[in-house]
Each structure stands twice: as C-alpha cells, then as structure tokens.
Length: 335
Ligand SMILES: [Mn+2]
Image 1 (cartoon, helix red, strand yellow):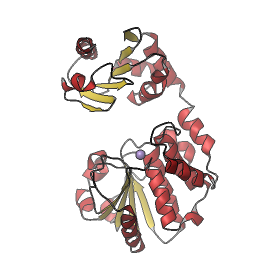
Image 2 (spheres, rainbow, N blue to C red):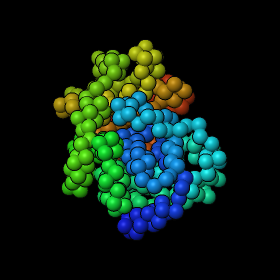
Image 3 (cartoon, helix red, strand yellow):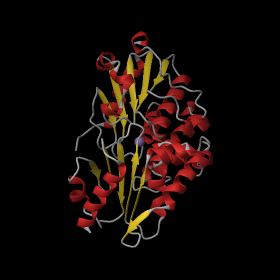
Image 4 (tube, rainbow, N blue to C red):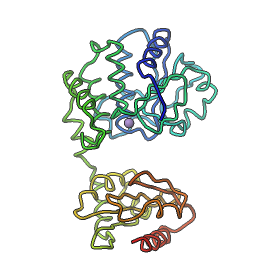
C-alpha cells in the first residue's frame, strides 16, 4: 500500500489551477459513468469560475448511453494538443497509462512535459504523474471530485446539471448503492449532492432500466440455448460474431447480460460467455459467486487475468467452439 496525503495533493492541485489558463481534461477509453461523470462535472464547474480555456478529450465522443445527460458533446476528438499546449492536464478515473489510447500515444511528449493531476480511486492506480489525488477508499472518482469542489469552496457553482454528472458516477460505480464500496461517505456525498436537485431518477432509468430492442434480441438468442452442468450451477454459452451481426449488436451489448441478468439466475454459482470479436479474436468473460471452481488453478492454464471472482482472456487464431471445448474440459477436471 502506498501512502498519499490527499489533502496535501488537493492543496498542490489548487495552486496549479490558480496559475493555469489552459486546461486539458481526459478520462479513460471506453469511458464508464464514473469516468464520464467526473470529467463532465469538473468541466462544467471550471466553465463557471475563472477564465479558463478548457478542452476535454478522449478517443471517442460522448457514448450514446450518456447522451441523456446533455453535455453538448464536450469531447473534442480531433484537437491538436500541440497547438492547444495546455498548462495542466487532469485525468479522471484513469488507473494506468495503458487505459489511455491514441490521444496519449500521439502526444507522448506533451503528456510527459506537462503537469498532470491524476484523480482516481482504483487500488491499482500506478500513481503515474506529478500530483496523485488517489483515494482508494472512495467509491468513485465522482466522490473525490465532490471532495475537491468542497475543498475549493466551489459549491456555489453547482447546479442540477453538474450534480447530475456527479451522482451518475457514484450511482454507477456502486451499482445503485449495492456494491460493498457503498460506504457511509459515499452515501453522505450522494446526500449532499442531492441538495442540488440532480435528475436522480433519470440516471437510474437511463443506465439501469432501459435496454435497446436489439440487445434483448441478442440476449434472447444466448439464453435460449444456454448450456449448463451441475443442475444449473455452472452456466455458459458461446456467441459467434454472426449472432452480433444478425441482431445488429456488438460485444458491448454483452456485459449487462453477464453482470446484471445472469446473476439473477437462482442457484447459479459460476457462469461465463465466450464471444467472437470483429477481428476474430475470442474473448471470454468468467464470473463466480462461490469457490465451486478454484479460479487460480483454472486460470493458470492460460495466460489470462483474474481478479477475485471475475476473469477474462482473449485468444487468437482459434475457433470459438474449440475454445469452448478446451474451457469445458479444463473445468470438468476441477469439479
Ligand atoms: Mn470509477
């Protein structure tokens, strides 16, 4: 464990901000609600005080899922950072440099030569730059941004829109206050933010209770011929690229099935999906609720990544059904 004096880091950040004019905001690729909400909240707060030139960038524009938050498309994906020459860079919810993609790779010099404030809550944060406001006890980066706003005494600039961005990250990263990171402080921050009248039901409806027709069709196909052993304790299926094409979906439509829908299956202990990506690579997402399968043993056969009870890997040059066979054979040995 590393020791960071967060108050001290926030104080340093305040001084840099005071002496800056041009500010670049960045968050991680395939941004989630927290990466998106924390950056947007800070973007709009900066717009309201001081005379800053602020640019937000990422390899992609605002994902469709967050369009209901109405950010006026703040992400500039074509900006020449050399021309902009920011005084400081602030990253949100970025745990390591690998989570930045083209924007970073194409501007390495600039990133390396600019003061960089790293705002994040991941335990895996590599503390990659000058100022690390990394609070691993925080539920979300949005919770930290709220702490920063309070410490800079900027509450008077908070409106319903900014509050909605902040609440989005807290709600998505705690899975609507379900996950174990729903700490007293996370709930307290949310309650403070609620005073500013965020659209809290809109967040829940849009991010948890709404699915496109195509996605449900895809899930339907996968569920229809779900495979299982041990009386439904272990459940899986394979999704060839042709099914994504047929249902007009992509692999992005898979995660909800794994983490929201299949988890509700009564008696389920272990489940996984293999799916074929457009470049023919096979991705495998594995989840476990119990220790029915020894994940360490199971995963060590391949060079994949695992983390408590979740794991994934990517295989190249193999047919999806061959990979499925291999995985099942290995699994059978362990149960
Ligand atoms: Mn986060």
